[in-house]
Image 1 (cartoon, rainbow, N blue to C red):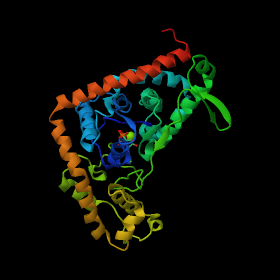
Image 2 (image 1 turned 120 degrees about the vertical axis):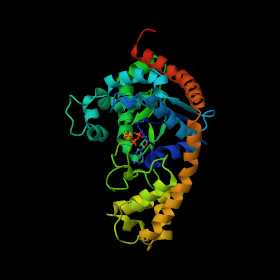
Image 3 (image 1 turned 90 degrees about the vertical axis):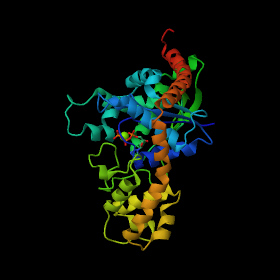
Image 4 (image 1 turned 180 degrees about the vertical axis):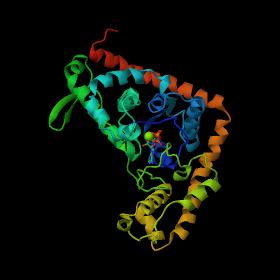
Length: 351
Ligand code: ATP
Ligand code: MG
């Protein structure tokens, strides 16, 4: 079975973008894959060091995974800090990757923004190196993420490829790896080339206030996002107030060009109802937002209410959530250590 890995940071309230870009796909992938889903708490330190509510944040992301339908007995659900092999491999990748690769990442540029180098953590720069380690410490091959993470997955491939080439002779000597061709080059590869799973009608959910910005936990305006924990009144109000243009919906997808807010709302409708945007427009083309928005409210509320209710129920039982994480951590450590033993051998560390 293909091995799937993905993670979500415990950095605030989960929103519709996290649900459609990540968690909904996690649930669907369980059927035909071996899945590892991680609350990436080490990543949460990169933008802000001290979090007073860290335990509650970790538990709430875990609760969201379970509430959405992830089965922790068939797959693995755990928090990153419970498996120190992630940080160990990240160090090695820090030495494989080049500073220039990290400085080119748009997430780094966005999150470091106007701050100067004295104010930005080294961890924020090295974030993609830890992300590569999260995935490759299991030698996972498929990674469901939102479109904003595409660049980091390309970097993961670059890191894997450089490791494979630089240590090619060592990998062979250790009796590990397989022969593959990268481009036209024959390479003896230890780490696989990961495939991002990003497609779908709405790979990047945009802010409800500005169709050119991604919906984000860190946007100061709560009206910009639909939180998984919002009640139905809040969801309804946010969608009714969502920015739109005055025109009716087009009947063809091409008509959404240059209309980012309309495109976003149609994309959300399509993703939640497992339809294409063309199918949604076949139903709503020619209609005003005064007709489309109430239908969208109903769909959003009916899709998220069960998750929301189950999340609240689970959050009342932190003992159960912690037991799930401990069990997942134990199983993840066994797998991660198997890789790390081989990596230490490849490098030549005495063990
Ligand atoms: P932060 O602002 O702390 O980075 P975030 O909302 O980006 O928070 P992450 O924990 O970084 O959340 O990302 C978790 C997953 O959600 C990733 O797969 C990411 O690609 C996806 N994701 C985040 N925002 C969106 C969005 N607006 N549309 C689609 N997917 C998204
Ligand atoms: Mg993010």
